[in-house]
Amino acid sequence: MKSSLTIRICMGTGGIAAGGADVMAVFADQLATKGIRADIRKHCSIHKVGCRGLCAKDVLVDVIRNGDKTTYQYIKPDMVERIIEEHVVGGNPVQEWAVGEDYHQFHDKQIKVVLSDCGNINPEDIDSYISAGGYSALEQAVKMTPAETIALIKKSGLRGRGGAGFPTGVKWEICRSVDASQKYIICNADEGDPGAFMDRSVIEGNPHAVIEGMTVGAVAIGADKGYVYIRAEYPLAVERLRNALKQARERSFLGKNILGSGINFDIRVKLGAGAFVCGEETALIASIEGLRGMPRAKPPFPVYKGLWGKPTVINNVETLANIPHIIRKGAEWYASFGTEKSKGTKVFALTGKIRNSGLIEVPMGIPLREIIFDIGGGIENNRKIKAVQTGGPSGGCIPAELLDITVDFESLARVGSIVGSGGMVVLDETDCMVNIAKFFLQFTQSESCGKCVPCRIGTKRLLEILERVTAGKGRLGDIELLESLANDIKATSLCGLGQTAPNPVLSTIKYFRDEFEAHITKKKCPAGVCRDLLSFVVLKDFCKGCGACKRVCPAGAITGERKQTHAIDPEVCVKCGACFDACKFKAIGKG
Image 1 (tube, one colour):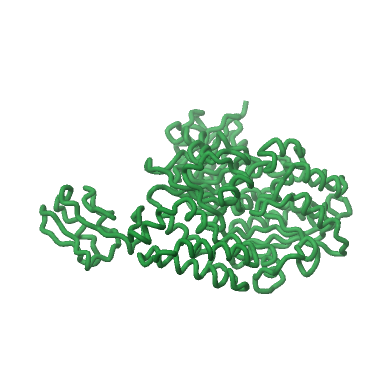
Image 2 (cartoon, rainbow, N blue to C red):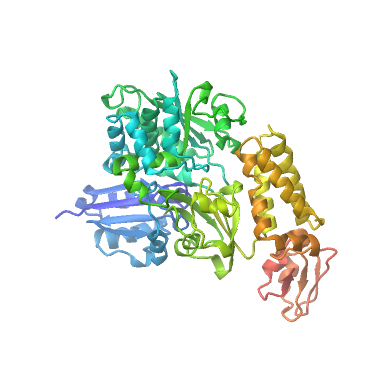
């Protein structure tokens, strides 16, 4: 019997950055050499796949030989020859390079719907998607009435995954009911949260799922034109999306007379310039129209008056990628995941002080603790967890004592955070929560479009107070001032950016007020992060006089002879921390 062989190489952004293209080239070259049996070459397929989730272990490579799969991690080009000789030819996997228990643990509690085909199919080959059931949902949808499709999506309980969590089927139903000669559907792929890479990875790994979901939505609401609004900083996602659109048109899944149904619909790609505010739907619409990306007051909502004044549905990447699965497998199947009010799964970008950072998809309602410790593998360097920041710069910080909270729209809102688009940043005991609040506010303040006074001026004042506090110049009453100003900004800002920008400030004050008080009254940063509040001293009982600290000090603030206790002049010290990092005897105290 002839051998069958499939080799899958991670070629998402992370895989390419780790050298995936070189690994793929060496595999192709080695398999073409005369030392490899002809029957293996003939029955071998090598193809690129999207993100596998655990990006930290790239380059990840699957070798599937006669149905048996082995996944390898950290693969470099010079490792390929041995894999081919021992595994491909010899049938003996190279166990020392295979993924370990932590890789399997990372995936054990995940339920993959949106990400189910990422890492398995070739994102640049429409036939690979079709072989996995792709476009069968569209084939069903063009035979259903719009009302039947919308009823199915409503019954599934799918809510928007862009942050607001509005019921998708309801949005489609409203737009369908509006009498208009022209309607639009827009995919919001303007992912701008720091540390977030969910939408980018979905488009890179399975662009056809987004196209199919978007086309089903267009058929349901009666739109014949659509846009994917995606930031230009995602060149790989843009390239694969455009390639997928071309292939879909060639196969009659897009364009005129889709699948012989008489329905016309096509999609254009609109590149965004990276403005965070354009993630807000009305600002996004303005950008597509060629205007400055600034939000407008609502109502009217886009489903009534959107792009060029016509009824418009806007869904994000993850929302649309769910649609084909719901059509194919049924509303009851999708609704079986999650909670009563938060159905289905959610994709998160798990980052920060976590052992296993990467892209995950979990059922709504999973305890936060299970994400951090079972999937994420716990905190780096065995430190204590301090908080988890969810929802990107518009979200809140959830303290360690609330880790047993379930991750869903309602539960996170009750503790002052949000699901958001899916950012999840883990913080440990070395993080200063005042500084964290300042970091996120710096981002939202700089990304404010400036149209409304509460956001333009209010976030600036919030940031000024936080900068003063972290510089050791905080005043009594600053905490109360922050709270009052933050609540006013939330209540009076025009759009979601301003309405949620104060969340990191309010949540950190609520759960970590003692750190704010220490900065203001004691002029100390308990985590030892805020530079202006730090002081470095040599601990005499530990100093060996090796001179390492003296050699790295850029200001010449350290004195002392070799093998004698050194000293730091506080008047000269610039508080850079180079001495602290350089001392292997832990003889530099920081406080």
